[in-house]
Length: 295
Image (cartoon, rainbow, N blue to C red; front, side, top):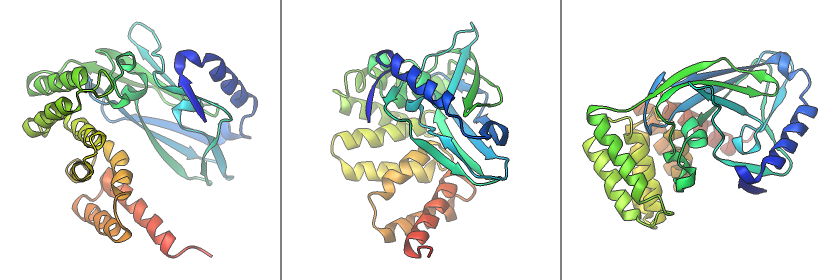
């Protein structure tokens, strides 16, 4: 698969969209329901804006969704600001045959999530990594569409932080301007700034982001043990963070099967009814299926 930047791939996107429209899944629009939920209605500047998506098959037959990866443009996301301008997708657009997405049995619900800042925020031209892109201050309306089905409307605001959050925000901004602007050339400087943030403001809305970025930065320096410990810290101290859903598979990949079971069990016992425990339970089920495959 070849990926190219958005402004170089308009033709590919149009072709891919046309193919998707020309070959809809039978009765999907009648049986599929899409609901979106924001984690809150007011976010701070440079705070990740997470959206939870719930696809429910309300029909009696199973159905297969188109790819939910935004690079294929099958999941259409419309973010409109107060001036009526639609924000442009700032990620990549894939070139090739659009692959199928997840399958839903009758009356099943499939969960997905995206970070709006990562995909529609400013910073791509500054070479910021996706997780550090951001939406400007203002009011926004959000709606999504997939397989001919539109979601509910959701509204949210982005405000400038004050007090301690304002101080934590400045550290995120400073790290973005140093260690990330030119392909991580000042990696250690960025690490120092993010470390200052998580030490001084561990309860900040920016702390989850800082911990996740620290894990990645240590990885860039080849510091595998520090990466391991930072991912573990993120999962155990911020169990409801969406970053956990990214961090947990990375951490499990560095463990033996026995260590995986032990750690997943620890998450469930320490943090029940959280995103971390829900994800841990799914991974334990997968390990159990591998151990005892269905005949």
